[in-house]
Image (cartoon, rainbow over all chains, first blue to last red; front, side, top):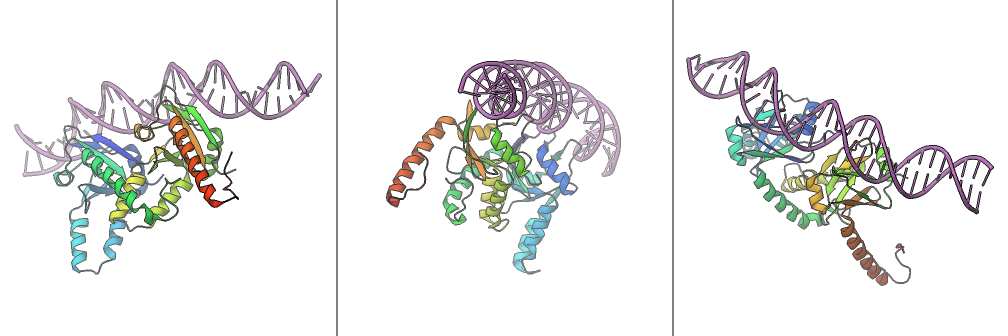
Amino acid sequence: MDEFVSTFTNRLDSKGRVSIPASFRAVLARDGFDGLYCCPSLDQASVDAGGSRLVGQIKDTLGQFEPFSDDHELLSTTLIGESEVLRIDTEGRIALTDTLKAHAGITGAVTFVGQGYKFQLWEPERFVAYRDAAKARLRDIRGRLGARGAGGAA
Amino acid sequence: MDEFVSTFTNRLDSKGRVSIPASFRAVLARDGFDGLYCCPSLDQASVDAGGSRLVGQIKDTLGQFEPFSDDHELLSTTLIGESEVLRIDTEGRIALTDTLKAHAGITGAVTFVGQGYKFQLWEPERFVAYRDAAKARLRDIRGRLGARGAGGAA
DNA sequence: CTTGATTCCATTGACGCCCATAGAGGCCCA
DNA sequence: TGGGCCTCTATGGGCGTCAATGGAATCAAG
């Protein structure tokens, strides 16, 4: 599997370090990117993280806007300016910066949420709330998914 | 046969493991996917499971949405974040995570329900109730279809 | 010399792998 | 056609390995 799948919650130790889930590390290793690319999510109190594929996706998104346009500037300010490349230590852990922790409200633990080509970091309780809201909204918009359904209908 | 067919019920052992029905294992082996992809059903207390074909179907669904869009984030959080890739041991067993067991209400046994390109995991009693309700609805529909029937089982 | 950061080592518990057993069903042969 | 053998599936449990975590040791600066 070369995608980030599933959800894990790990604790920060006294030095602020947290282990990246082993299965995510395996994906990152295959990806080849050195370190972990992290950028605050645009609309949520979470952090988007990943490797080359995330970086590529961000570039593609930026490429859809005219260079020097307001929109391009706004996006690049957030997607690139607010980003960090975190070092992964020999045990597979990272130390989140204060900026990232503040954005996501992370204190004692982190929930890692796989999203295919990237994953997100959440404060565990906030994630539960977001997840429940997401499910509820998904039921609403499911009609738009067409006849094939999203892995559920009978 | 390369489709999941029929229904089986197996018990969980003291370590929470349960055997995948042999005929399903054969289909998975042909599918080539390493492990078992499991995704909570959106509307039912069950788990959708399968291999590459299920994953492909989910990817197709996600591919209809623009990356970083609200809808894409919602979908990937639910469809991928809630999913698990379970390892299949040398005996053909899996260990369900607490999250999946909680979603389906599974405690002592699991009912495996073949559905062609995927199959579902149910708590046995809940499945019986669901099946009976489905049958009743089917009779209802068939009645409206007139004499030719809907090819339902006896 | 003190502070912060990075690597190294130790512990604990979960999980994967291996072997063992029983029971059901299929197959062969008389 | 009946009985017995044999294979395979489902299930139990022991053991080793690895991941997550905590803390000490080492290194880089200021």
